[in-house]
Image 1: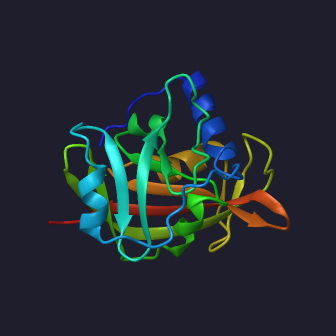
Image 2: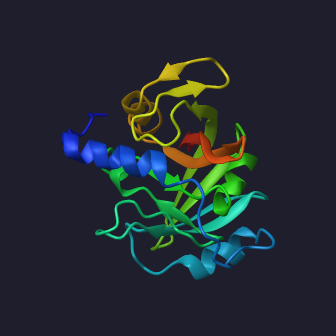
Length: 201
């Protein structure tokens, strides 16, 4: 896949969105008490819009509506429990990023594991299937900085902010879930990424 060029100022904005906002969010009641069956989730979530991602479903793990970032709010991540936000910048690379605060819907991301199937549901009812292939845990070495470097807690790999963005959001078509990791009283101590690739038919 050919990488789409991106201007430096857009990359800076992307990094700011990517590394700061998916941490702690104010809770707004909208949580799901139980995971519905796929038909129960699928049928009401469709709205006829062919190219709009409307929901993400993982059996026995999560069933979450997807909301879009407003055009004039590039730092937006939903403050509602029970939904996730699509990372608009990632779409420029032909990939899909789903963001959630770790005290809200992001809690469910830690329940994802290798080999699980993920269904993305679009407004027209189309379903895109993925398989989880990576679960990545990183410590932000400068948690409050947009340009923090990141330490892979599983392999000691050390990445810059730019390298991290490339690592999880560019390349062949894939889906990435992202939330923060809480540790030592810091809601943004680290980052959790769950990467899924298209399921072969």
